[in-house]
Image 1 (cartoon, rainbow, N blue to C red):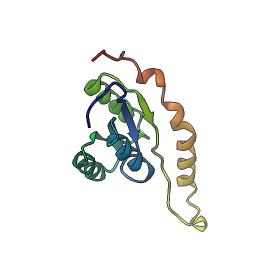
Image 2: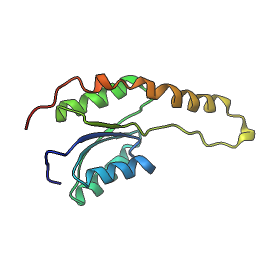
Image 3: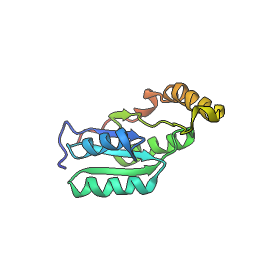
Length: 135
């Protein structure tokens, strides 16, 4: 990847699989720098190897988005490393896998609470606390 004036620093949560992994890989190999976070660090490491082998730019961090302080550390690390965050792809989610007749009500409530509450926890103003430096 060659940095250019249109390159963005992009945070991607839930980047270890599925849509998040695809978004992170695509952005990192098309001229942007990705800071990828997810709980499964070994999968993030494999993503990082693939992206770098393809000439992309990526950093990975272990991240549990259900833990507010962990998310704050993720953001702080990105700001420390890159002085800015241009885009947040808030893709992470939780999904219990069980049959309906198993009545895993606590798991379902956790999934619903996360889907409703977690996006509200991300304050875009907190993500842009440092101005972008001219390069």
